[in-house]
Amino acid sequence: MSNLTVTSEKLRSLADRHSHTFAVSPDLIVACADRIEELEASLRDAIEDIEHWTGYADDYFAERWDLAGDLAKHRRTLEGEP
Image (cartoon, rainbow, N blue to C red; front, side):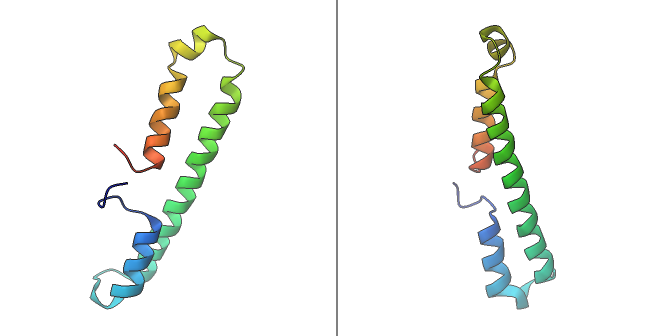
């Protein structure tokens, strides 16, 4: 994960340590961190769902719609990679 990747932990740390220097409310920063956690959880669930039903797809379907590529893309997104 690059140093430029925004994580909920980084946002919370900024809100805690630098709340007096922000032009935006620390509560908003915490709300953004909460939303990141919700979206990450949802993406993890989606990855797991795809993994489960992919086993029922025949080879043609899996290759035609590049299910392995989709899973890899979603995993990279979850890890903060481009």
